[in-house]
Image 1 (spheres, rainbow, N blue to C red):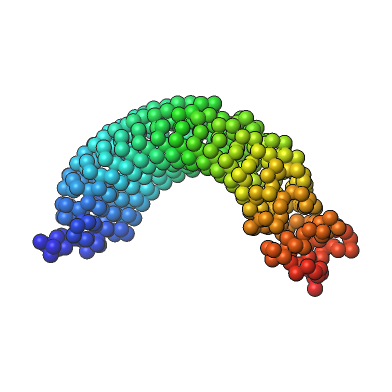
Image 2: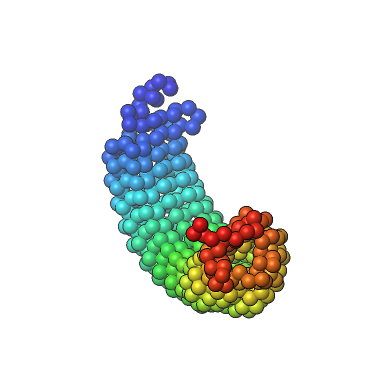
Length: 407
């Protein structure tokens, strides 16, 4: 029997006809799914072939399939009930095809499906209830399509969905009730869209969400995170935020990591992050307009361990009382800013485990040099003095000596 099964394997494929019953035909010049494979196969991969359509008569031959990968082909249509015999299918990958729409009944019999990848297609819209039969779906990938709007019933029925990726589409609005039916969701990626506003109750039903990526949109200060009581990671980098409104972030009591990089903030006001008691990592890199950080800007951040303010090229001043709990910082990156002074009171410098301060035009006066040499020695780093005039372009070494950077 094994020899017979191997003889049924096309020369372009690799067939493993033992317990797993796996067939791989990746990168083969095949226009159709082979009809003479082992009918008991559980896994079929035909990535980067030349498939244009799926033949229901051929698919009928493989009712035991649990894994089907048809990524990077030329499939432009999924017929109604095309997978009606694949009732055991758990993973379906259709990434990188030419799908522009989906039939309402395309997935109607895939009740055991857990992962569906439709990324990198040409989907323009999704009909309401397209996925409603997929009660066991846990991961849905719709990234890199052409979606501009999603109707409120798009995700109805997805009672067990945990991961939803809508990144790199053309979404400009998110309906208030779009996520009402996917209360089990833990990860949501909306990055690289055209979103300009988040409604007050858009995320209200996502009480289990832990990871939210809103980066690379056009969001402004009017944000709402109502309902996100379990959120641990939030990325709002590369948007149009001009200030931090602390009340907007108040529901995020469990937030551990926040990325606000590359926005349009000019300063960090007092108590900007009040209420984020669980925050451990804060990134605000590449802020082109940030010039100052006010007293107690980071007050309330009792668990902050890692702060990255690198490449804020006009950041000149951080108030010495910016931190309420500066002694708890472990990682601090202030590199490539325009800092002239580092207040000794800003942090417990010798308690840090990692420090980056290069690329700043420091004023090497007595105050700075009274504590900085010890810090430089601990981290084996150097700084360059830009003032006073007699120390211009002098590099202060970790060894505690000055040298001209041109020598």
